[in-house]
Length: 320
Picture 1 (tube, rainbow, N blue to C red):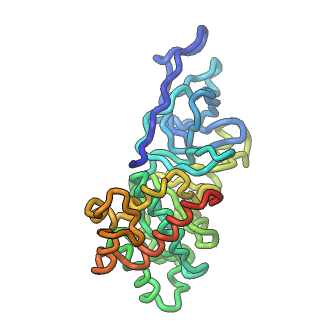
Picture 2: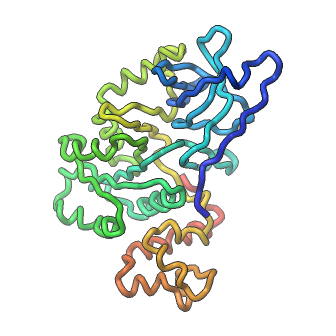
Picture 3: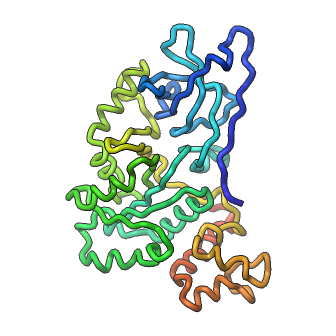
């Protein structure tokens, strides 16, 4: 049931095309209007096209590419095995890979707009399904009327092992600790609109605009051509994928019977239910409900599980 990355098999080259022995490795750092920006190990940025048969090639993918005859551009020939990936619905219900090889997903909330806990649980369920560690950032903590009360709302998450980072991008509070959490990892921010994801990104990447221009210039397309996710090198080490359009991802790939595995505190109880097809609603002998009753599982989390389960059962549910 666990989500895994997959490998796109290399295609045998046609006559006159570069052989696999001449292919080079690179890292996809951005989708551009006319192709992909691929960074080489020595820091060069190459504009590459892709073979149609490869399927989705996402920011964060490690690839093998073949240089063109002039050496200025290239073509992605193979996508190397992914350690992880995030998926969202695309056109006509087709699932689309939006980011690959992530080590962390940071879910951003704030006091204004107020946290959407159902959305937080949705993100966490996807991360559990995809086996990507998740952490929570409470941004704009300086605007909370009662900081202790605000953080107490997160106790249910802290208790089950999700790290929480209270910060203020505007005031600089907690940013040193957040940089430490990001260090050495490939991360992405997720969260509802208005929680300050852009402010966090701009604080962490003070030269972001210069880097965006560099990607466009060095790939030969001129400035202001990036249209989607972009992977940036963090000054302290590690990567941050900035993608406003991929800030939300739904449960489209998860079936109702698998949703309970997205709640990590349910996992130790699921195997002890009386019936294998227990839905953890009002089923007899449900070990998950027993966990709620004896205080091992937060009632609020279980209630939101039921709400998400109901959404999954609706055929017309649209996951953003």
